[in-house]
Length: 243
Image 1 (cartoon, rainbow, N blue to C red):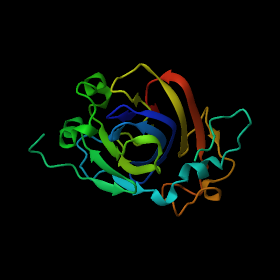
Image 2 (image 1 turned 180 degrees about the vertical axis):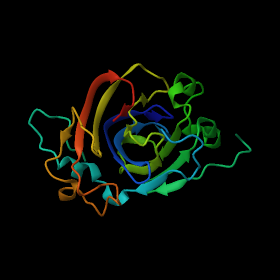
Image 3 (image 1 turned 90 degrees about the vertical axis):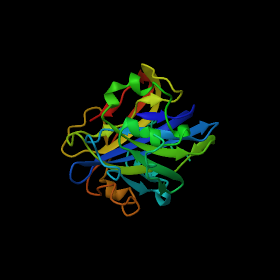
């Protein structure tokens, strides 16, 4: 789910997912955006209920800004494939803020804890009432600066999973404070699954260690495994993707 606390225009979204140790998942997220105000991107994540405030580990990829450009190098691109185009409460204590490269990040354990964030970085009142499926989720919140055609370095973190058999991709859109049944997608999803049959996904030509900066990825990439890729383009059902 890609939610913004203020109006935003978003394009060229790329998401990578991989299982990590002890029932946890890595997630890497990148996009271009334009916004007239400072805002937050909010990613609901399916964490175990009552997760602690330090349950999410944020990973600084400021020195690996071309993470997804390298990822694309693993996939042969037919001439007809456009998906792989390159492109440069008042009394409650405040939630912990972590500097992660060029932005600040926080983990919000539950919907009620948004009251502990600055109002600019929350969704409008009533939005969560329309999204009951997220009532038990936690939220990774990234604070972003206003501007046109921003391209920030990839945002990455590791979180505990409520279901350790699934890979979760946050793809539901809320860019204007409203929940729409369908949304315009300009996404490419990537993953390194463990023993899953990836129908409808394209496998990389080589193991990831042959085209990714493994050391710069800080453990996000398993160099021995192939990567898989799936573009999502056009007007599609507004929902998260679970593998």
